[in-house]
Length: 308
Image (cartoon, rainbow, N blue to C red; front, top):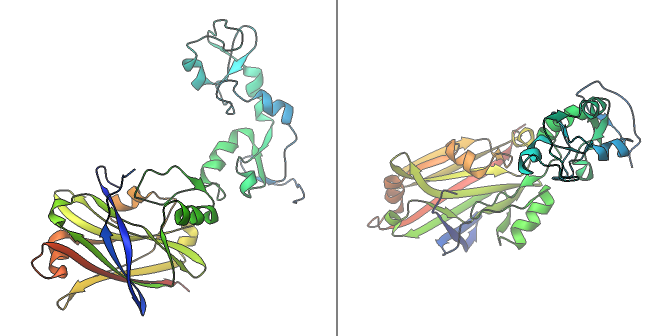
């Protein structure tokens, strides 16, 4: 969420055709496989590696991460990665000799012959890769953990989708609802005093998958706006199998939005800043709210469907 924002609590208002909720403000701090050989350099191979001894030699003794060129060594042969060389002030952490600028070319060459597993092996990736292709793969591995999609605090929890669903429910107290249609009523008194705010996240179980509905207020340039958008708890390729629509209106007028839910691989802030959702100028939101425009009472309806 935007800096200085507030988290707002969602409260059940009523149930009807679809779902109807009222969202009010609450003060809160923001913050068994057989190994095979196949493929070529840069392409994953299904199986396990058997270079444990050499693999351990490539672990930096300071940060314990795998080392990549340039790999440095002291006059006594102790190695460490380039990032840690600066951290130890050019002094070998093992023997305390001055490091100098000696590279361990032999170890760098040995690394070229290694095949190593993806770091996300325990999460389901059983491919192995040439040593120097490992990092590139891991940046896009489909088994890599997802970040918590909660936008009301700076949450550092990561995990697979099941883990995050349980985390959202138990730790963030997020409401979980079954169904592919929704009807939300967002309420805020004195809306002119709120420039940055995030309402409580809602998660929908639809088509056996989970979707996160976000709603918040922020400044778009100099204009105060409200924005609603949907994120999909899964990868981008899976997200493209679904579409959603959002609608807000009153007094014979309405705004509509139709799009593809964004994967939670994209951060909440990235989606918001790309304006990929229903954007409602504050004056129009207050017009839709009716009355004397001193209180936000905005009803947002929507549905999710699966593309054929």
